Length: 113
Image (cartoon, rainbow, N blue to C red):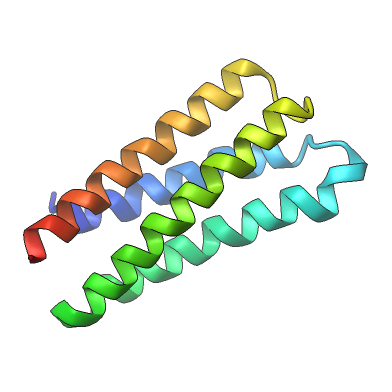
């Protein structure tokens, strides 16, 4: 499986896992923090699909944007943990999944330069 397909598959799996976690956020954060995270994850998937079918220059721009979005997600999940919306196990799992996507996107970006 190519790196491009792998990253899309891993991102999809991350979204499935995160949606189950976000569903359990307290009402006070469901419509703010949880919605923001969900939207960001879906945007990352959309950008990956665009990158998959785009030319090299567009791919590089999209992959850089994805890198920034992944960093934002790391902080949103850290905030979620700090305000006790998620436990340490879920935080660790989500961070691991996001880091894996970051490694693959970084490798993909590097292969283009």
